[in-house]
Image 1 (cartoon, one colour):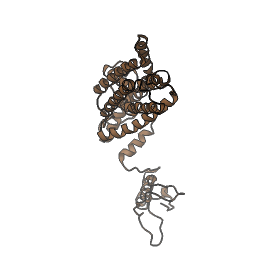
Image 2 (cartoon, helix red, strand yellow):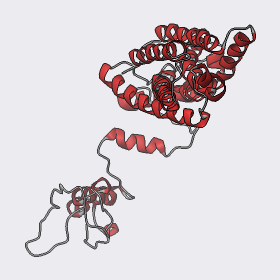
Image 3 (spheres, one colour):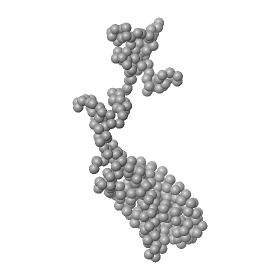
Image 4 (cartoon, rainbow, N blue to C red):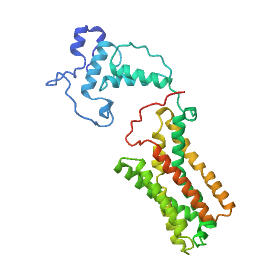
Length: 330
């Protein structure tokens, strides 16, 4: 502790007795007290319990004196082992016995598996049938979101406002109301997912609502000569029906192992955003055949929403899934 000793001149027996003791003083404690504090006043070497206390410091000093060097106490053996391993550079060689503490040998085996595992390799998705099928299903369940935003709402002024008999619509305002609905839907989707302990059920519910509000928007409200405020409310409801974006991205990420999870989670949403080009292309082809805007949009919507229903039925439920696994390499 605070005693001044020339430890080199003392015998081992004396070191064992003296090291880690408090400074001698009248009526002072022979041993350091057991410290139960978690926080200390600022200005000293400790400050917070995780950095030490009087009891730990005494033990560290005693071991340092006996062994020669600097001692750092951990709350567990695995804590110490993990800290030592974390100091090693990538690719470092570790020599260890085959038979040892199970926690250590298990950690070394996992480290070796991670080292040999391909990470972020898009080929693991493209050239593995099961992964590719899951990948395409994940994309398809997100397409209805961009069908709504990229086709119905973004073309409000030129196509779907007039279809409903309203001609003073601003695309920017329509998109704003749509995203307000989407944000509200996302909040509700997260709550429902936790309540039902399911992600698939939530997506299914939102797809049904999207189908219903799309039919209402394109069929029932056709030529109803509504005002702009009512149209914007419909845009809000359309957005709410697509409010499963966060759940969709979560499902996409959780379908894949740790080594390609980030790759899937980053590329799938971008491909879904890009799918708006396919949606608009199909819409344009139908319009060019003489089908009016409303029915062309309805056909495209029913097609992609139906595809999303099929895809969500083919994916496995991921709520509560253990995500500590790797996808096998090629």
